[in-house]
Image 1 (tube, rainbow, N blue to C red):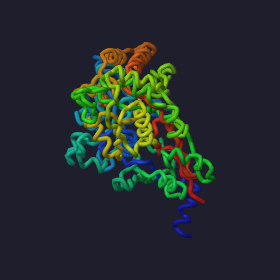
Image 2 (image 1 turned 90 degrees about the vertical axis):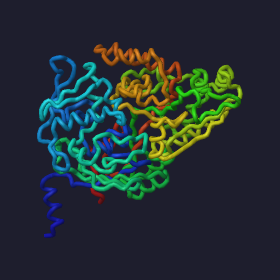
Image 3 (image 1 turned 180 degrees about the vertical axis):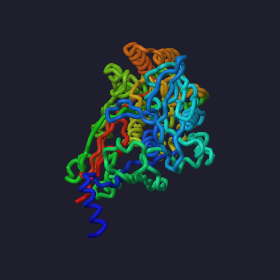
Image 4 (image 1 turned 120 degrees about the vertical axis):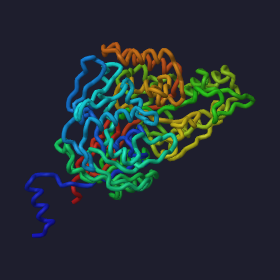
Length: 530
Protein backbone atom coordinates (compact mmCIF):
# COMPACT_ATOMS: atom_id res chain seq x y z
CA UNK A 1 0.00 0.00 0.00
CA UNK A 2 1.39 3.41 -0.96
CA UNK A 3 1.92 6.12 1.64
CA UNK A 4 -0.42 8.46 -0.26
CA UNK A 5 -3.24 5.90 -0.28
CA UNK A 6 -2.74 5.24 3.43
CA UNK A 7 -3.11 8.95 4.18
CA UNK A 8 -6.37 9.09 2.20
CA UNK A 9 -7.78 6.03 4.01
CA UNK A 10 -6.85 7.37 7.42
CA UNK A 11 -8.45 10.73 6.63
CA UNK A 12 -11.65 8.96 5.67
CA UNK A 13 -11.66 6.83 8.82
CA UNK A 14 -11.15 9.88 11.00
CA UNK A 15 -13.99 11.69 9.27
CA UNK A 16 -11.94 14.87 8.78
CA UNK A 17 -12.04 17.09 5.74
CA UNK A 18 -8.95 16.95 3.58
CA UNK A 19 -6.80 20.07 3.96
CA UNK A 20 -6.87 22.22 0.86
CA UNK A 21 -5.44 25.37 -0.68
CA UNK A 22 -7.62 28.42 -1.29
CA UNK A 23 -6.47 30.60 -4.16
CA UNK A 24 -8.26 33.92 -4.18
CA UNK A 25 -7.83 37.17 -6.04
CA UNK A 26 -8.95 40.78 -6.27
CA UNK A 27 -7.78 43.92 -8.04
CA UNK A 28 -4.98 45.17 -5.79
CA UNK A 29 -2.32 43.91 -3.44
CA UNK A 30 -1.93 44.20 0.32
CA UNK A 31 -0.25 47.45 1.29
CA UNK A 32 1.79 46.34 4.32
CA UNK A 33 1.95 43.77 7.10
CA UNK A 34 2.61 46.41 9.74
CA UNK A 35 -0.61 45.92 11.68
CA UNK A 36 -0.97 49.56 12.80
CA UNK A 37 0.04 51.27 9.57
CA UNK A 38 -2.79 50.99 7.03
CA UNK A 39 -6.40 50.90 8.20
CA UNK A 40 -7.87 49.53 4.99
CA UNK A 41 -10.15 46.51 4.53
CA UNK A 42 -8.08 44.26 2.25
CA UNK A 43 -4.99 44.98 4.31
CA UNK A 44 -6.76 44.30 7.60
CA UNK A 45 -8.08 41.05 6.15
CA UNK A 46 -4.51 39.91 5.54
CA UNK A 47 -3.18 40.91 8.96
CA UNK A 48 -6.11 39.05 10.50
CA UNK A 49 -4.77 35.79 9.08
CA UNK A 50 -1.45 36.36 10.83
CA UNK A 51 -2.32 38.21 14.03
CA UNK A 52 -5.02 38.05 16.68
CA UNK A 53 -6.86 40.84 18.49
CA UNK A 54 -8.33 41.08 21.97
CA UNK A 55 -11.88 40.63 20.69
CA UNK A 56 -13.43 39.22 17.52
CA UNK A 57 -16.72 38.94 15.66
CA UNK A 58 -18.46 35.61 15.38
CA UNK A 59 -20.27 34.65 12.18
CA UNK A 60 -23.25 36.79 13.21
CA UNK A 61 -21.04 39.84 13.83
CA UNK A 62 -21.46 39.50 17.58
CA UNK A 63 -18.47 40.40 19.78
CA UNK A 64 -16.76 37.40 21.38
CA UNK A 65 -13.66 36.98 23.61
CA UNK A 66 -10.41 36.35 21.76
CA UNK A 67 -7.00 37.10 23.29
CA UNK A 68 -8.88 38.78 26.14
CA UNK A 69 -10.61 35.96 28.02
CA UNK A 70 -12.60 38.18 30.37
CA UNK A 71 -12.82 41.81 31.49
CA UNK A 72 -14.35 44.19 33.99
CA UNK A 73 -14.31 47.89 34.82
CA UNK A 74 -11.70 48.87 37.39
CA UNK A 75 -12.78 50.09 40.87
CA UNK A 76 -12.20 53.73 39.94
CA UNK A 77 -14.38 53.27 36.82
CA UNK A 78 -11.64 54.85 34.70
CA UNK A 79 -10.83 51.89 32.52
CA UNK A 80 -11.14 48.22 31.64
CA UNK A 81 -9.11 45.43 33.21
CA UNK A 82 -8.48 42.71 30.62
CA UNK A 83 -7.46 39.18 31.56
CA UNK A 84 -5.18 37.91 28.81
CA UNK A 85 -5.40 34.32 27.59
CA UNK A 86 -2.56 32.17 28.91
CA UNK A 87 -0.31 29.87 26.91
CA UNK A 88 -0.72 31.65 23.55
CA UNK A 89 2.42 31.48 21.38
CA UNK A 90 3.68 33.76 18.62
CA UNK A 91 4.77 32.08 15.40
CA UNK A 92 8.44 32.34 16.38
CA UNK A 93 7.80 30.76 19.79
CA UNK A 94 7.48 33.73 22.16
CA UNK A 95 4.72 33.54 24.77
CA UNK A 96 2.04 36.23 24.69
CA UNK A 97 2.06 38.44 27.80
CA UNK A 98 0.28 41.55 29.01
CA UNK A 99 3.41 43.50 28.07
CA UNK A 100 2.80 42.66 24.40
CA UNK A 101 -0.82 43.72 24.66
CA UNK A 102 -0.07 47.04 26.35
CA UNK A 103 2.73 47.75 23.88
CA UNK A 104 0.47 47.01 20.89
CA UNK A 105 -2.39 49.22 22.08
CA UNK A 106 -0.04 52.10 22.88
CA UNK A 107 1.63 51.64 19.49
CA UNK A 108 -1.78 52.00 17.81
CA UNK A 109 -2.11 55.39 19.55
CA UNK A 110 1.10 56.78 18.04
CA UNK A 111 1.06 59.63 15.47
CA UNK A 112 2.06 57.43 12.51
CA UNK A 113 -0.69 54.88 13.25
CA UNK A 114 -3.72 54.85 10.98
CA UNK A 115 -5.62 53.09 13.78
CA UNK A 116 -5.83 56.11 16.08
CA UNK A 117 -9.48 56.46 15.14
CA UNK A 118 -10.04 52.91 16.45
CA UNK A 119 -8.50 54.06 19.73
CA UNK A 120 -10.69 57.12 20.33
CA UNK A 121 -11.68 57.23 23.99
CA UNK A 122 -8.65 55.14 24.97
CA UNK A 123 -5.88 56.96 26.85
CA UNK A 124 -3.23 54.29 27.37
CA UNK A 125 -2.64 50.66 28.31
CA UNK A 126 -0.54 49.36 31.20
CA UNK A 127 0.51 45.80 32.01
CA UNK A 128 -0.40 45.11 35.66
CA UNK A 129 1.27 41.69 35.63
CA UNK A 130 2.05 39.00 33.04
CA UNK A 131 -1.61 38.33 32.27
CA UNK A 132 -3.53 41.48 33.19
CA UNK A 133 -3.80 44.79 31.34
CA UNK A 134 -5.43 48.04 32.42
CA UNK A 135 -6.80 50.06 29.49
CA UNK A 136 -7.64 53.58 30.64
CA UNK A 137 -10.62 55.13 28.87
CA UNK A 138 -12.56 58.38 28.89
CA UNK A 139 -15.88 56.54 29.24
CA UNK A 140 -17.47 53.10 29.54
CA UNK A 141 -18.62 53.22 25.91
CA UNK A 142 -20.05 49.93 24.64
CA UNK A 143 -18.08 50.51 21.42
CA UNK A 144 -14.82 49.81 23.26
CA UNK A 145 -14.88 46.13 22.30
CA UNK A 146 -15.80 46.72 18.65
CA UNK A 147 -13.13 49.39 18.28
CA UNK A 148 -10.39 46.93 19.23
CA UNK A 149 -11.41 44.10 16.92
CA UNK A 150 -9.04 45.32 14.19
CA UNK A 151 -6.21 46.37 16.51
CA UNK A 152 -3.76 43.47 16.21
CA UNK A 153 -1.39 42.35 18.96
CA UNK A 154 2.34 42.03 18.21
CA UNK A 155 5.33 40.83 20.21
CA UNK A 156 7.29 43.62 21.90
CA UNK A 157 10.72 41.92 21.83
CA UNK A 158 10.36 40.96 18.16
CA UNK A 159 9.37 44.52 17.21
CA UNK A 160 12.28 45.90 19.20
CA UNK A 161 14.76 43.51 17.61
CA UNK A 162 13.69 44.61 14.12
CA UNK A 163 13.49 48.35 14.78
CA UNK A 164 9.72 48.31 14.48
CA UNK A 165 8.66 49.82 17.80
CA UNK A 166 6.76 52.53 15.92
CA UNK A 167 4.20 52.06 13.10
CA UNK A 168 5.32 52.40 9.53
CA UNK A 169 4.38 55.88 8.30
CA UNK A 170 2.03 55.19 5.39
CA UNK A 171 1.65 58.82 4.33
CA UNK A 172 5.40 59.12 3.72
CA UNK A 173 5.88 55.80 1.89
CA UNK A 174 8.17 54.66 4.70
CA UNK A 175 9.65 51.16 4.48
CA UNK A 176 10.06 48.90 7.48
CA UNK A 177 10.93 45.31 8.36
CA UNK A 178 7.38 44.65 9.52
CA UNK A 179 5.95 45.75 6.17
CA UNK A 180 7.07 42.43 4.63
CA UNK A 181 7.50 40.13 7.63
CA UNK A 182 5.12 38.84 10.28
CA UNK A 183 5.19 37.17 13.68
CA UNK A 184 1.70 36.91 15.08
CA UNK A 185 -0.38 34.53 17.15
CA UNK A 186 -2.92 34.07 14.36
CA UNK A 187 -4.22 31.00 12.50
CA UNK A 188 -1.82 31.32 9.57
CA UNK A 189 1.85 32.10 9.07
CA UNK A 190 3.40 34.14 6.28
CA UNK A 191 5.28 31.77 3.98
CA UNK A 192 6.23 34.07 1.12
CA UNK A 193 5.60 37.60 -0.12
CA UNK A 194 6.08 38.86 -3.69
CA UNK A 195 4.65 42.38 -3.87
CA UNK A 196 2.04 42.71 -6.65
CA UNK A 197 2.61 39.06 -7.62
CA UNK A 198 1.58 36.57 -4.93
CA UNK A 199 1.43 36.16 -1.16
CA UNK A 200 1.24 32.72 0.47
CA UNK A 201 0.03 31.89 3.98
CA UNK A 202 0.21 28.44 5.59
CA UNK A 203 -1.70 27.08 8.56
CA UNK A 204 -0.31 27.66 12.03
CA UNK A 205 -0.73 24.12 13.38
CA UNK A 206 -0.01 25.37 16.91
CA UNK A 207 -2.76 28.00 16.87
CA UNK A 208 -4.41 28.29 20.26
CA UNK A 209 -7.96 28.35 18.87
CA UNK A 210 -8.00 25.50 16.33
CA UNK A 211 -11.40 24.34 17.57
CA UNK A 212 -12.94 27.55 16.18
CA UNK A 213 -11.98 26.64 12.62
CA UNK A 214 -14.82 25.01 10.70
CA UNK A 215 -13.28 25.02 7.22
CA UNK A 216 -10.42 22.98 5.76
CA UNK A 217 -8.09 25.59 4.25
CA UNK A 218 -4.48 25.03 5.32
CA UNK A 219 -2.85 27.20 2.66
CA UNK A 220 -3.90 30.57 1.23
CA UNK A 221 -2.53 31.91 -2.03
CA UNK A 222 -3.51 35.49 -2.76
CA UNK A 223 -2.93 36.94 -6.23
CA UNK A 224 -3.64 40.57 -7.15
CA UNK A 225 -5.00 40.76 -10.71
CA UNK A 226 -5.68 44.33 -11.80
CA UNK A 227 -7.07 43.52 -15.26
CA UNK A 228 -10.79 42.78 -15.21
CA UNK A 229 -10.62 40.43 -18.16
CA UNK A 230 -7.64 38.55 -16.73
CA UNK A 231 -9.28 38.21 -13.31
CA UNK A 232 -12.40 36.67 -14.85
CA UNK A 233 -10.33 34.40 -17.09
CA UNK A 234 -8.31 33.17 -14.11
CA UNK A 235 -11.51 32.14 -12.33
CA UNK A 236 -13.05 30.47 -15.38
CA UNK A 237 -9.88 28.50 -16.11
CA UNK A 238 -9.50 27.34 -12.51
CA UNK A 239 -6.29 29.30 -11.95
CA UNK A 240 -7.97 30.88 -8.91
CA UNK A 241 -10.83 29.57 -6.76
CA UNK A 242 -12.45 32.81 -5.57
CA UNK A 243 -12.70 36.39 -6.83
CA UNK A 244 -14.18 38.91 -4.39
CA UNK A 245 -14.62 41.68 -6.97
CA UNK A 246 -15.63 40.15 -10.30
CA UNK A 247 -16.16 42.81 -12.97
CA UNK A 248 -19.79 43.87 -13.04
CA UNK A 249 -19.95 43.37 -16.81
CA UNK A 250 -18.94 39.69 -16.38
CA UNK A 251 -21.37 38.70 -13.63
CA UNK A 252 -24.14 37.47 -15.94
CA UNK A 253 -21.62 35.35 -17.83
CA UNK A 254 -20.27 33.90 -14.59
CA UNK A 255 -23.79 33.09 -13.38
CA UNK A 256 -24.37 31.01 -16.53
CA UNK A 257 -21.19 28.99 -16.15
CA UNK A 258 -21.93 25.55 -14.57
CA UNK A 259 -18.53 25.52 -12.84
CA UNK A 260 -19.05 28.86 -11.04
CA UNK A 261 -21.14 29.94 -8.04
CA UNK A 262 -22.00 33.64 -7.65
CA UNK A 263 -23.07 34.92 -4.24
CA UNK A 264 -24.29 38.34 -3.18
CA UNK A 265 -24.31 40.46 -0.06
CA UNK A 266 -24.56 44.02 1.23
CA UNK A 267 -21.38 45.70 2.44
CA UNK A 268 -20.96 48.13 5.34
CA UNK A 269 -19.33 50.61 2.94
CA UNK A 270 -20.34 53.82 1.15
CA UNK A 271 -18.55 55.18 -1.91
CA UNK A 272 -18.24 58.96 -1.61
CA UNK A 273 -16.31 62.03 -2.72
CA UNK A 274 -14.25 64.17 -0.38
CA UNK A 275 -13.38 67.81 -1.13
CA UNK A 276 -10.65 70.04 0.33
CA UNK A 277 -12.57 72.50 2.53
CA UNK A 278 -9.54 73.80 4.41
CA UNK A 279 -6.88 75.29 2.17
CA UNK A 280 -7.41 78.82 0.86
CA UNK A 281 -5.52 78.02 -2.33
CA UNK A 282 -5.91 74.29 -3.03
CA UNK A 283 -3.14 72.95 -5.21
CA UNK A 284 -5.28 71.22 -7.82
CA UNK A 285 -8.05 73.81 -8.19
CA UNK A 286 -7.82 76.68 -10.70
CA UNK A 287 -10.36 79.52 -10.90
CA UNK A 288 -9.93 81.81 -13.94
CA UNK A 289 -9.11 85.36 -12.90
CA UNK A 290 -9.03 84.57 -9.19
CA UNK A 291 -6.29 83.63 -6.76
CA UNK A 292 -6.34 82.31 -3.20
CA UNK A 293 -9.88 81.07 -3.50
CA UNK A 294 -11.30 77.65 -2.65
CA UNK A 295 -14.73 77.04 -4.21
CA UNK A 296 -15.25 73.90 -2.11
CA UNK A 297 -15.58 75.99 1.05
CA UNK A 298 -18.88 77.29 -0.31
CA UNK A 299 -21.87 75.08 0.48
CA UNK A 300 -23.53 76.17 -2.78
CA UNK A 301 -20.64 74.75 -4.79
CA UNK A 302 -20.73 71.45 -2.90
CA UNK A 303 -24.49 71.29 -3.42
CA UNK A 304 -24.03 71.97 -7.13
CA UNK A 305 -21.55 69.11 -7.42
CA UNK A 306 -24.04 66.83 -5.65
CA UNK A 307 -27.04 67.86 -7.77
CA UNK A 308 -25.09 67.43 -11.01
CA UNK A 309 -24.55 63.71 -10.37
CA UNK A 310 -27.07 61.39 -12.02
CA UNK A 311 -26.62 58.54 -9.56
CA UNK A 312 -29.22 56.37 -11.28
CA UNK A 313 -27.22 56.53 -14.50
CA UNK A 314 -24.10 55.44 -12.61
CA UNK A 315 -26.00 52.59 -10.99
CA UNK A 316 -27.35 51.48 -14.36
CA UNK A 317 -24.44 52.02 -16.74
CA UNK A 318 -21.35 51.75 -14.53
CA UNK A 319 -22.43 49.45 -11.70
CA UNK A 320 -24.81 47.31 -13.80
CA UNK A 321 -27.36 47.50 -10.99
CA UNK A 322 -24.88 46.25 -8.36
CA UNK A 323 -25.06 49.28 -6.05
CA UNK A 324 -27.54 51.04 -3.76
CA UNK A 325 -27.67 54.84 -4.25
CA UNK A 326 -27.56 56.73 -0.95
CA UNK A 327 -27.62 60.24 0.45
CA UNK A 328 -25.64 59.54 3.60
CA UNK A 329 -22.10 58.50 4.50
CA UNK A 330 -23.06 55.27 6.33
CA UNK A 331 -24.59 52.07 4.97
CA UNK A 332 -27.95 50.68 6.02
CA UNK A 333 -26.32 48.00 8.22
CA UNK A 334 -24.91 50.74 10.47
CA UNK A 335 -26.56 51.91 13.70
CA UNK A 336 -27.67 55.53 13.17
CA UNK A 337 -28.75 55.02 9.53
CA UNK A 338 -32.34 55.93 8.66
CA UNK A 339 -34.33 55.73 5.38
CA UNK A 340 -34.71 59.51 5.47
CA UNK A 341 -30.95 59.99 5.59
CA UNK A 342 -30.45 57.57 2.73
CA UNK A 343 -32.94 59.35 0.45
CA UNK A 344 -30.97 61.42 -2.02
CA UNK A 345 -31.69 65.03 -2.88
CA UNK A 346 -32.93 65.33 -6.51
CA UNK A 347 -30.68 65.25 -9.54
CA UNK A 348 -30.96 68.80 -10.91
CA UNK A 349 -28.14 69.97 -13.22
CA UNK A 350 -29.92 73.23 -14.15
CA UNK A 351 -30.21 74.21 -10.50
CA UNK A 352 -26.58 73.18 -10.06
CA UNK A 353 -25.59 75.76 -12.71
CA UNK A 354 -27.58 78.42 -10.86
CA UNK A 355 -25.87 77.57 -7.60
CA UNK A 356 -22.43 77.93 -9.22
CA UNK A 357 -23.41 81.33 -10.59
CA UNK A 358 -24.74 82.45 -7.21
CA UNK A 359 -21.49 81.37 -5.61
CA UNK A 360 -19.50 83.52 -8.06
CA UNK A 361 -18.47 80.89 -10.59
CA UNK A 362 -20.78 81.43 -13.60
CA UNK A 363 -18.00 80.25 -15.93
CA UNK A 364 -17.04 77.36 -13.71
CA UNK A 365 -13.50 76.39 -12.70
CA UNK A 366 -11.12 73.50 -13.13
CA UNK A 367 -9.87 70.89 -10.70
CA UNK A 368 -8.41 67.40 -10.48
CA UNK A 369 -10.06 64.47 -8.74
CA UNK A 370 -7.86 61.56 -7.64
CA UNK A 371 -9.00 57.96 -7.60
CA UNK A 372 -7.52 54.49 -7.28
CA UNK A 373 -7.97 52.20 -10.27
CA UNK A 374 -7.67 48.86 -8.46
CA UNK A 375 -9.29 49.20 -5.05
CA UNK A 376 -13.09 49.54 -5.16
CA UNK A 377 -15.54 48.15 -7.68
CA UNK A 378 -15.33 50.27 -10.85
CA UNK A 379 -13.54 53.05 -8.92
CA UNK A 380 -11.94 54.70 -11.95
CA UNK A 381 -15.07 54.28 -14.09
CA UNK A 382 -17.24 55.86 -11.37
CA UNK A 383 -14.89 58.84 -11.09
CA UNK A 384 -14.81 59.36 -14.86
CA UNK A 385 -18.60 59.22 -15.02
CA UNK A 386 -18.91 61.81 -12.26
CA UNK A 387 -16.34 64.06 -13.95
CA UNK A 388 -18.30 63.87 -17.21
CA UNK A 389 -21.49 64.90 -15.39
CA UNK A 390 -19.69 67.82 -13.76
CA UNK A 391 -18.47 68.97 -17.17
CA UNK A 392 -22.12 69.45 -18.19
CA UNK A 393 -22.51 72.22 -15.60
CA UNK A 394 -19.43 74.07 -16.84
CA UNK A 395 -16.63 72.53 -14.77
CA UNK A 396 -13.33 71.32 -16.21
CA UNK A 397 -12.46 68.19 -14.29
CA UNK A 398 -9.38 66.01 -14.78
CA UNK A 399 -9.36 62.44 -13.44
CA UNK A 400 -6.05 61.30 -11.98
CA UNK A 401 -6.27 57.50 -11.61
CA UNK A 402 -3.49 55.43 -10.07
CA UNK A 403 -2.84 52.06 -8.36
CA UNK A 404 -3.86 51.82 -4.72
CA UNK A 405 -0.22 51.61 -3.60
CA UNK A 406 0.27 55.18 -4.89
CA UNK A 407 -3.22 56.48 -4.10
CA UNK A 408 -3.30 55.88 -0.36
CA UNK A 409 -0.01 57.66 0.48
CA UNK A 410 -1.08 60.58 -1.75
CA UNK A 411 -4.45 60.79 -0.03
CA UNK A 412 -3.07 60.45 3.49
CA UNK A 413 -0.48 63.17 2.88
CA UNK A 414 -3.34 65.57 1.94
CA UNK A 415 -1.95 65.91 -1.56
CA UNK A 416 -5.43 65.97 -3.14
CA UNK A 417 -8.10 68.59 -3.69
CA UNK A 418 -10.86 66.09 -4.46
CA UNK A 419 -10.87 62.33 -4.38
CA UNK A 420 -13.02 59.23 -4.48
CA UNK A 421 -13.02 57.07 -1.38
CA UNK A 422 -15.12 54.20 -0.01
CA UNK A 423 -15.50 54.06 3.75
CA UNK A 424 -16.51 50.92 5.62
CA UNK A 425 -17.46 50.85 9.30
CA UNK A 426 -16.33 47.67 10.99
CA UNK A 427 -17.92 48.63 14.33
CA UNK A 428 -21.32 48.74 12.57
CA UNK A 429 -22.02 51.96 14.48
CA UNK A 430 -22.17 55.46 12.98
CA UNK A 431 -20.05 56.92 15.77
CA UNK A 432 -16.91 55.43 14.23
CA UNK A 433 -17.79 56.83 10.79
CA UNK A 434 -18.53 60.29 12.18
CA UNK A 435 -15.40 60.31 14.36
CA UNK A 436 -13.33 59.36 11.32
CA UNK A 437 -14.91 61.36 8.49
CA UNK A 438 -16.75 64.29 10.06
CA UNK A 439 -15.21 65.24 13.38
CA UNK A 440 -12.87 68.21 13.45
CA UNK A 441 -9.35 66.90 12.90
CA UNK A 442 -7.10 66.67 15.94
CA UNK A 443 -3.61 65.25 15.23
CA UNK A 444 -3.04 64.46 18.90
CA UNK A 445 -6.06 62.24 19.46
CA UNK A 446 -6.91 60.69 16.11
CA UNK A 447 -10.24 62.52 15.93
CA UNK A 448 -11.15 63.19 12.31
CA UNK A 449 -8.30 60.97 11.12
CA UNK A 450 -10.04 60.27 7.81
CA UNK A 451 -11.49 63.80 7.58
CA UNK A 452 -8.98 64.59 4.86
CA UNK A 453 -11.08 67.45 3.50
CA UNK A 454 -10.73 69.00 6.97
CA UNK A 455 -14.37 70.12 7.19
CA UNK A 456 -15.36 71.30 10.65
CA UNK A 457 -18.79 71.73 12.25
CA UNK A 458 -19.14 72.58 15.93
CA UNK A 459 -22.61 71.03 16.23
CA UNK A 460 -21.41 67.70 14.75
CA UNK A 461 -18.48 67.73 17.18
CA UNK A 462 -20.90 68.37 20.05
CA UNK A 463 -23.20 65.50 19.07
CA UNK A 464 -20.25 63.13 18.70
CA UNK A 465 -18.96 64.07 22.14
CA UNK A 466 -22.39 63.41 23.63
CA UNK A 467 -22.77 60.07 21.86
CA UNK A 468 -19.37 58.93 23.11
CA UNK A 469 -20.60 58.90 26.72
CA UNK A 470 -24.37 58.42 26.39
CA UNK A 471 -25.50 55.15 27.98
CA UNK A 472 -29.12 55.26 26.74
CA UNK A 473 -29.02 53.52 23.34
CA UNK A 474 -32.12 55.27 21.98
CA UNK A 475 -30.82 58.74 22.87
CA UNK A 476 -27.37 57.84 21.59
CA UNK A 477 -28.69 56.62 18.23
CA UNK A 478 -30.72 59.83 17.84
CA UNK A 479 -27.54 61.87 18.40
CA UNK A 480 -25.78 59.92 15.65
CA UNK A 481 -28.68 60.36 13.22
CA UNK A 482 -28.82 64.09 13.98
CA UNK A 483 -25.10 64.45 13.26
CA UNK A 484 -25.52 62.54 9.99
CA UNK A 485 -28.38 64.88 9.03
CA UNK A 486 -26.13 67.93 9.52
CA UNK A 487 -23.47 66.19 7.40
CA UNK A 488 -26.02 65.61 4.68
CA UNK A 489 -27.55 69.11 4.70
CA UNK A 490 -24.16 70.77 4.38
CA UNK A 491 -22.80 68.43 1.70
CA UNK A 492 -19.58 68.01 3.68
CA UNK A 493 -19.10 64.81 1.69
CA UNK A 494 -20.82 63.74 -1.51
CA UNK A 495 -22.12 60.19 -1.00
CA UNK A 496 -22.76 58.11 -4.10
CA UNK A 497 -23.81 54.57 -3.27
CA UNK A 498 -23.46 51.60 -0.99
CA UNK A 499 -21.14 49.06 -2.54
CA UNK A 500 -23.00 45.80 -3.11
CA UNK A 501 -20.92 42.68 -2.78
CA UNK A 502 -20.57 39.97 -5.39
CA UNK A 503 -18.24 37.03 -4.89
CA UNK A 504 -17.64 34.48 -7.63
CA UNK A 505 -16.13 31.09 -6.81
CA UNK A 506 -15.51 27.67 -8.28
CA UNK A 507 -18.26 25.13 -7.56
CA UNK A 508 -16.00 23.20 -5.20
CA UNK A 509 -15.62 26.24 -2.91
CA UNK A 510 -18.10 27.05 -0.15
CA UNK A 511 -17.51 30.63 1.05
CA UNK A 512 -20.04 32.97 2.65
CA UNK A 513 -20.12 36.65 1.71
CA UNK A 514 -19.34 38.69 4.82
CA UNK A 515 -20.81 42.19 5.41
CA UNK A 516 -17.33 43.61 6.01
CA UNK A 517 -16.09 42.06 2.74
CA UNK A 518 -13.41 39.95 4.38
CA UNK A 519 -12.58 36.46 3.20
CA UNK A 520 -13.18 34.44 6.37
CA UNK A 521 -10.83 31.59 5.52
CA UNK A 522 -11.48 29.80 8.81
CA UNK A 523 -15.03 28.97 7.69
CA UNK A 524 -14.33 28.18 4.02
CA UNK A 525 -14.41 24.64 2.69
CA UNK A 526 -12.59 23.72 -0.51
CA UNK A 527 -13.63 20.30 -1.79
CA UNK A 528 -11.17 18.26 -3.83
CA UNK A 529 -11.63 18.61 -7.58
CA UNK A 530 -12.85 15.29 -8.98
